[in-house]
Image (cartoon, rainbow over all chains, first blue to last red; front, side, top):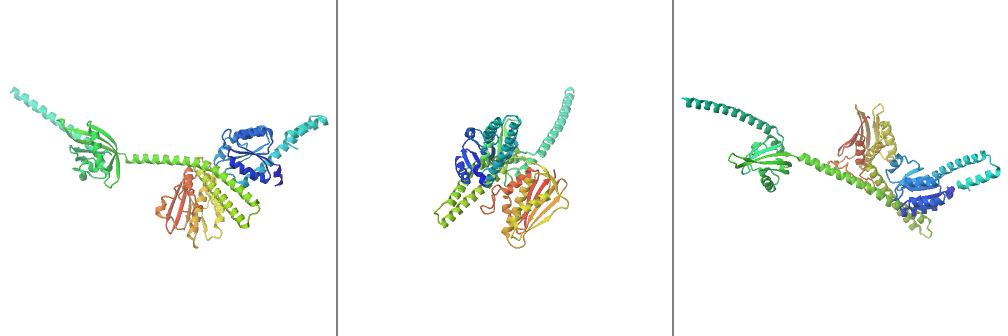
Length: 164
Length: 384
């Protein structure tokens, strides 16, 4: 799992002690981890830094998990969210049409399942992002700009898509 | 002569009137008799001293006495507690009539019978009180129903509280789980630990993890029980579902002498129901049978799973030849948290959940058990 070193994970949960240990474990695994303790804080952090996967608790004071992931994806449309829920709210979250999340996991979360979910969510993110990037590059090439214009446009795109 | 004939006419008139009074009286008596014979309430009358003069047919049903047994006895003899009954009578009668609610009477067989009693003074022509008439309506069943309702309401409330507690407990359990897992990693990375200490610490961490897992299972089962969700019904073959369930439980049967026999009907048993919920029930019933057989030991250990199709319902039986359930425990097996399994093996949730699930599917879960012979659980569910 060498590519874990590249995965940037944003944690959002009001249970601070839980995040303390969870982020320690994920860091040790090689993930880049940022812990935030409310939806609002997560949204603020996401304004300045790009993440690949967000792990969001459904029930939080302030804006809840569903709203948080909605706002996060407005800022970073490729970000994949894993939502953690108490028992019984998986269905209710799905039923209410909030199927935006990459996956719903029951709390207390099974660590191995979480690791699998993170790496799959990351894969999905990269796929979507790459596909969109190619589309945009094609568009730029079709637009009939000169070589210098194309290079500039692509550099811009690389910046937007967080590709180095 | 004239006065003679007029008094003769008078006599005739009086005789006629008397005859018609007699008829009227007869009718009134028949009418009253009819009421006393047919009313389901206890209707009695006493003399001024409170001794019973009459006792209606309804009273015989309500209190179990025939009127011959009680006539002449004081009315207080019929009360559950004569001393508290007196004041009730007196306060009721202050204004010549009154109503007393929830008056406890005593049935001939010793049980308490609650009545709403209306009491009236019986007044003679001189305006003197010569006795009391009472009409008592048996409200015991209604009262019982009311108590049951209060109990049901309380249980529902306990259910809601338990669900809330389950949710809340989940958070600290999640924290403990993470903290223990982290501590485990720290231990495995730590240098300078002796081999013994390392092993001991690793075992402790494993225990904590296993126990939080146990908490998690309990809260999730409990929340699954408390959650009100409508079953989603699809067409399914009960036989297929049972075979899958048995395959799922098969690992538990390895290295045991337990045999599972199938007595299925020849045709597939198609029903319109919720496969996930039904599977949960079958898992519970078969796992219970396996557990009971493991306790029994010996070589002759069998589970027979049989199916039957009836006109509008299907029947699934799970029968074991384990030790059976003692009579005194049979009333408790559907109670929440009642378990005979050792700590850690049973939550006491399986059977009450199963019963709840089956009745949500419009069916019924029953059992029969005989000590030394075995136990049979029967699930009946409607075809659609």
